[in-house]
Image (tube, rainbow, N blue to C red; front, side, top):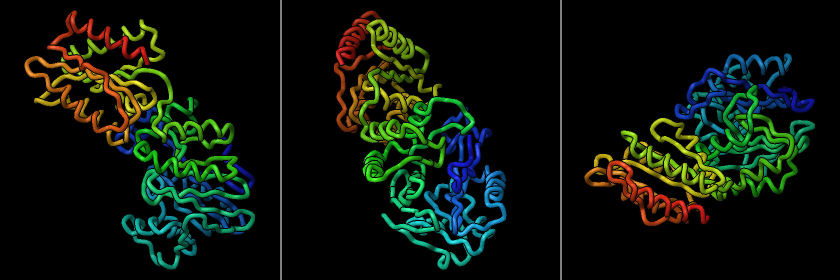
Length: 388
């Protein structure tokens, strides 16, 4: 990656290839990047810091880019520690540095840090405010709940760069050669997905700007075909299906529910369904299952009964979807139980709380192990699923 974004704007972030779980829950096999930027002008501006895991390398990058000059301003886009950990350190290194943030950011800072003379260092900005630093002018765009309440973005008017905070970010270090959409989608729905309304509000603001480059806090800098990335965010944040296809998510204790889910997947493939995505919720990456549930227009959930409820991996999956505002989909339910099937009822209770969801009927009930009648019922379900 070319660290020189423009003649005066430099990437000073760090790749983390040693992290196992991002936010202690998301598998990141290709690591993560903590992005930070330096704008050099009459006033030098650092755009966010990085996670404590990357402090030493980040500070070295900053010093090299400064080449003996000082830092005049720090812009804080987001107070989450993977971007804000080094705020106090930077304040101590540059005692005359001012901090640019909104009111909510300054409410959060004392919860994390004890910064000397904070009141004197504050530069409080709100929607549309601008700060001129020489040849560059920073314009501030509030983005509350994308995905914390204090988040803001910064538009640099001269170079037409949008510093987009966590927006347009993705999993994966910058030296990873992979398709943007897959890991950006998994990142979006698991981290930002609940806040589609708020993302739509920010996209409407973005439409008024002439954006040539997007600089997020995670993932690659986006310079070409920006309509593609903005279009993906528009689809994702409006909760509309991105592609035709069926996600089958199952939670099986001893393998019998798994057997039924796999049988259904084979039937669907034989029926010519565009895409069938199958997940074992007890073993597969939950974040990827959530990603595909949002990506495709139909969902089948199959689970065993457990403690007069539903097997916990399925309960967790459905509650995760519920918490991320899953909606505008069609859902089929398959339950399994030996003496008192309860999984279907419990799954239905969660699914019925979701907005604009159509539930296929009847629900299929397996008694311990799939039999010929269940196979016939699944054939009928396939007919209904394929109609879509």
